[in-house]
Structures are given as C-alpha cells and as structure tokens.
Amino acid sequence: MKMYSPPDQDIVVVGASGDLAARKLLPALYNLEVEGLLPGTGLVIGYAESDWDDDAFRSHARESIAQFSRTGIADVPWQRFATRLRFINASAGWDVLRSRLEQRQRLVYLAVPPSAFATLVSALGAAGLAEGTSLVIEKPFGRDLATATQLNRDLHAVLAEERIFRIDHYLGKETVQNLLVFRFGNSVFERLWNRDAISQVEITVAESLGVEHRGAFYEETGAIRDIVQNHMFQLLSVAAMEPPISFDAEALRNEKVKVLRAAQPLDPKHTVRGQYAAGTIDGQKVAAYTDEPGVSRTSTTETYAAMRMFIDSWRWEGVPFLLRTGKRLCRRESVVVVSFNRAPLHLFHDTGIERLDSNRLVVRVQPDEGISLSFIAKQPGPALTTQPVEMDFSYGTSFKTSPPEAYERLLHDALLDDHTLFIREDEVERGWAIVDPVLTAPPPVVTYEAGSWGPVEAEAIAGPGHWHMAEEGT
Image (cartoon, rainbow, N blue to C red; front, side, top):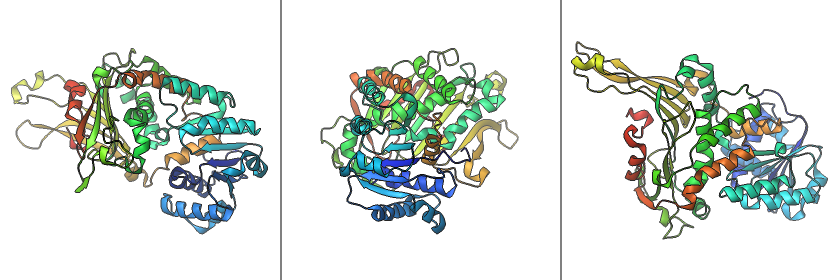
C-alpha cells in the first residue's frame, strides 16, 4: 500500500445504511484513518434512505467498526474519524448533498444494487456534481454483454472512463497481488510459467455458506454471473498474463485484457451447472437451495459452476484452465493450483515405482493466505520409495501480521486516482462475451449434496488431470 495520504477530498457513501457499508466500507475507512491514509481534509458523508441525523450515523458507524474492523476500535482514531462523519437522507436529494460538500473533489461510492447505478449517475450529473467526482461501483457490471455495454454507455454519458473505478475486491487481496511478484520477480518460476512446463491450471473459489438471506438476489444472478465472470476471470488474468512493461495502471490492465481476448468463449459442452441439495456441513444439517427463503421451489439457478477453457496464445496453447466455484461446498477455499509436467519414469523402472506425482504450486488466496510447492522426496529407509512433500510460505507466519483488508487497499487507491487494481470497460465487456454462450444456452442443472465438492458430473470437466484439493495432497 502506498504510504501517503491522498489529496484533500470528500467521500460519499451512497447506501451508507446497508450491509456492504457496515461490514466493509466503514471499517476500511476507519482503518485508513488509523494508518493516516485518509485525505488530510475531507468529510465522510453517508447518503441513504434512513431517518438518521449525523449523530445517529456516527453511532451506526461506531457499532459497525467495533464489530467488523480487523483492528478493533480505539478512542483516539475514532474521535478523529467521527469528526468527519455526516449524514444526508436520500429523500432530500443531491442538491442538499452538494450544499454540504466541503471539497472540490469527491469520491462517490455506490454501495447499492447494480440496477440503481444508471439512475443514480444520471441524477448525479443533473445535480451538477459530475465535475470533480470519481465514482466507485461494485460488481456485477451488467447481467450479460448487452447490459454491460449499455451500462458503460450510461456511465460515460456523465463521467469519463478515467473517473470510473469498477471494484472487484479480489484484486485487493494481498495474495493476488503477490502472484504478480511471485511470477515476475523469481526467475526460476518465470522461466517455467508456460506450456512447456505446465500441464494444467486450476482455479477454485469454494464457499461453505449458502445463499443465506440473499436468495431473491441469487435467483436473478447465479454462480456464473456472481463469481465466474468477475472474481475468477480476475484470478485467471493475473495467473496467465504476459509481463507488463511496468506496473503502470494501463500497462497492467492491457495485459489482463489480452488474456481475456485470447480466451476461447465457454463451451456449454465443457461446462457443468450444479445446485446444492440438503446435506451436512461441520456437523450441521443445512437446507437445499430450493428451500432457502426467496428461492423458487422449481429453480434452475446454478449455485455451482465448473468449466474447462483454453487460452489461444503462444504461452498457453493446449494447457487446460479448470475453473470451479460453488456454494455449500465442504469448506471455504480460494486457490490457484498450477500442475507441472511429470518427470520421465524411465530412471525408476527397476525400483518398483509405477508413477511419479507432478510438482504442484498452490497459491492460497483465502482463508490461509500463502503459497506452497509440492515436490517428490525419498522416504527414509533402505527401499527407494517416494512421496510428495511440501515447502510452505504463510503470510501470518512470515510477516507476523495479517494483510490489510482488500477494501482498505482499493479505497486508498481510488482516493489516489490509481486505476491499477480496478477493471476497465473493455475488460468487463470481454468477460461477458466469454460467458455469453453458457448464459444463452445453459447446460441443465444437476444437484450435489451440501458439504461435498460439487456434482460428480464435474469430474468429466477436469479430464485426466482431475481436480486437486490443496491440503489433501491429491
């Protein structure tokens, strides 16, 4: 994180009474205050349909920070932060907001449903607030290629592309950023990062939680729109990109877009859609998706998706990329698994060893951030017997500290007008173009037991490489 304060500006959180603001944005802004990384001068203004005044907003913010901040809450930084806080009931309108702004520049964060983006941005422009505004919006950016393209048009009618920050919190995670340093800062791995040495790349974003209170939202979204088109494609781009000429924002984003342009559109024949049935997780029985509040009993919305795709580039020709994500899987885990080609067996023909496991690199994005490398070693004893062993790096053990929350890094970057970790319009549209074939002609939904690794049909997607469970050594 760049350790200096951004220019003076106000911060406006639209939807300040909502869950995202309470769990992520207010704690992140408070922690930036703790670190001295907020603008030296500027208000934090909450804007929402709640019957609050400034004091009520401060009380809500304090409760949210005390519950969700990774650093807890302390009196001195809280008092500094509290003096910034103001609240405006959205029924008063943008004109009242404009009258309470103190700075010529402002960061406006739309912590609201995506369906409200176009209307709110149009109203912002009509209120004369376009000049001096930088805008942050959350995914999903549209529902398909057509709606994403229209959303970009609506945004650009008010704000230039360089004033728009499309946020995907996965890019703010330290492990994702460290993958760039790991790839391009270590000559051993940089030379191996291609089709000559790598047999397959697997990306898993697994959740043990279900849809919880978001059933109605999920019915309209599904796993492909919710996770694949954004989070997983971000991991894919970082794992597969060519080295940029610098860490300049546009140089980095150009290489990410090149990966997506080279990626083949998803083939429904190589895609599995699943939906969780009832099951047991951590000893607790959980309901089927169709029994969740807000979900149709005849729903065909996928809570799981697995796909096999290829990137048509010199580096990755013929290397399968296996992507899977799902809810109510056996554990929460986000990993990138790189499997290297197996060594020739001929040296070991007379030793009784019938198979050598491949070397495997596992980048743990969450929850236990780190990187491990498996390799083959001889077991102690007179016989020549091998087994996989691991070299492991953990953020918590190595740096004796937990990495900052993704929203802290991303909010700070947006305040600095740094687009490096944000998504450009052409990247969004290309991502939707890749998934559009399975949105247009979706494969049928199959069920899987909650607490499993998903439907058995997904094994066919992996092919001979099969899916790997990072800590199981399989």
